[in-house]
Length: 213
Image (cartoon, rainbow, N blue to C red; front, side, top):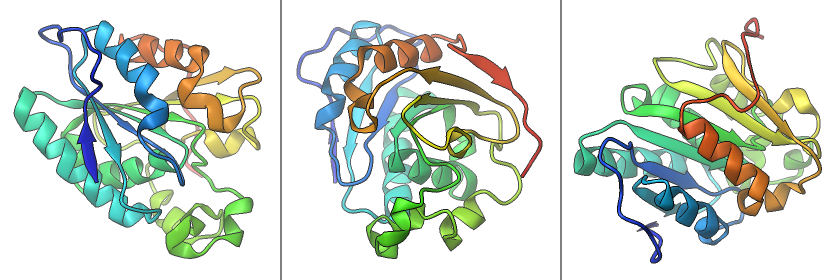
């Protein structure tokens, strides 16, 4: 696992909480470089994680370690932005590993919060935890989806289907962006703009309180 900062960056602005960017299944920190540079230009300290594998439980423990170090370095709560499966590892950290006391904003991009049918073909520790019938998702989605004082936002492309699988119960900002292929979401200018607006304190879509499933 690597904890990285973009090489090309502006100085951080005092008072800006640090941002940790978390990639999705079978990916790396590389697709986040443009978003990282953009956020650094907005004055955020930015960090990127390279996960050791495709197991959400292992990855959530990595998130916990990184957030502890980043929070201690900046004496601040932390914003977490996760793409696809990275959003699930991050939610597990917030809900079960004490992340609610460390995290300011949780932002997911195209994360299958309620599962993916395609993931059911994968081994459990190789992405199969994203299967909509997995024990991992059953535990993650039991009770409150949005615990603690964390502000929750889910951003999705209209090409992410079904749409409901990307939402969260319990109160969150939801934002749809048309026509971006799932794999290109981290590099999409529209997604980057939505993340910047979210971290700036504005819901780029609509805030909806859904009843618990």
